[in-house]
Length: 223
Image 1 (cartoon, one colour):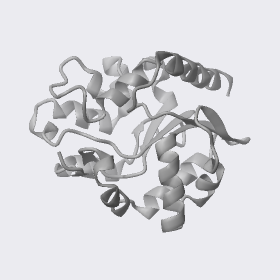
Image 2: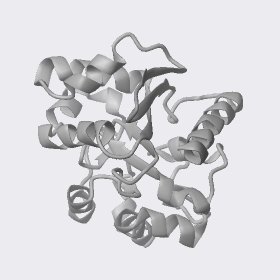
Image 3: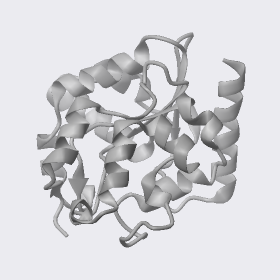
């Protein structure tokens, strides 16, 4: 499957109107940054698509309603569970957070548009789809407002540094991430803790997920 913009107009419009998943990121204690939100190109042709629309309309309500943070984890998800972001959200769920934490988490992506296929198959297109206004907004979310724990990963860090050089945006964030080691705090201040970990899309150990979950829980309970 070729990498590209998801064909469904309703899904594209949802992302533009509400470029995050979960709680409003300015109100979140935990902000998780990714490259893009990936879906099967056929999902909008299936009745299950109603769950996707419901989730993007109000991710907090969805989590509390179904006791799972994402529709990919519902038992009636009809597509290949090895693809299209399912592994990402399955790994996140292993950290043990439940519906009582729904208003603490926000998921943001560098792209404000849904995709299909594998990002690595066409990195040129990924960079072409970037929106400077959206990226500036992400940096503002991270650096202003209430103190928050921001999770990035090693691939994302490289992309952010490249974007800052080529597009003159995310410069403050790139500076904080420069030289960051994996599985460590890349930056800490009175307003933000940025942790550089592994992508949930990769094969990662339960020990890593347990340790990361404990870091997040400690931050939620003590901030």
